[in-house]
Image (cartoon, rainbow, N blue to C red; front, side, top):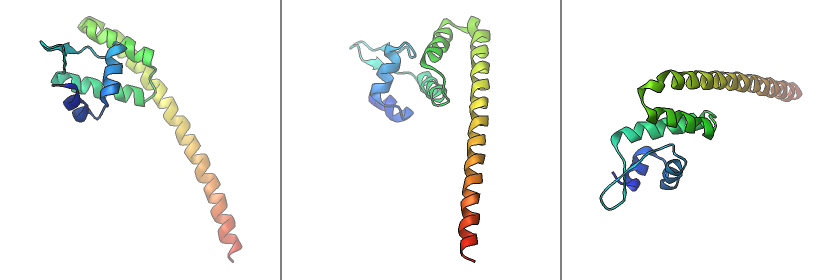
Length: 120
């Protein structure tokens, strides 16, 4: 499929798709006229790249994971280790955000009590 269709299907802009290709995150076949020809398998791969990015994985680490992926099944263990490390990082960030939310909730409760106390 062509880049516009692929962009609509994945929700990722054509600009970003070209950037992913330029950075080596995505290997795209070309048709006889030299146009990008995306495959169905590329859809889930690009969505996974986006999830890694959205969860804070550094571009260099995504690139490393991508390189390993394109090398084949013999790199599964290393890919898994990379994802396990990233998962730890995501869990730690999640813990921090939960703490931040608790702090905000405490502050909001203080304001509610003061506002409600002033109405009596």
